[in-house]
Image (cartoon, one colour):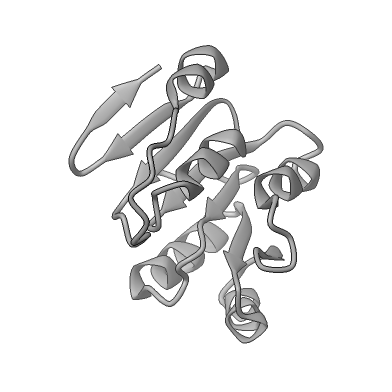
Length: 137
């Protein structure tokens, strides 16, 4: 997953995952604007030290995809890395810009509830990458 200067890079909740910390550093070094989410203000502070430009506490801001859209002036983020999946995947897709990319690297969400992604993917011009599936909308 390439990240370029001027792009918005968004990492989804489980920033306790070491892989996400690496993505922060790479995206920040590439010149991307990094947005991080967590339920822990301490983890968000660590994310800022690793290069996150914006942080969102998803417990305090349950509609965090709207917050990401606000940060990007309504355009949406270029790249989302999501290690949580589940119902949060809809937030990930909603936060993307037209032509944006999402990498689903795992499903740590323990809830097994269906998520309808057909309309946001097909009509939003967004793409999804995963180790288990690949969909280009």
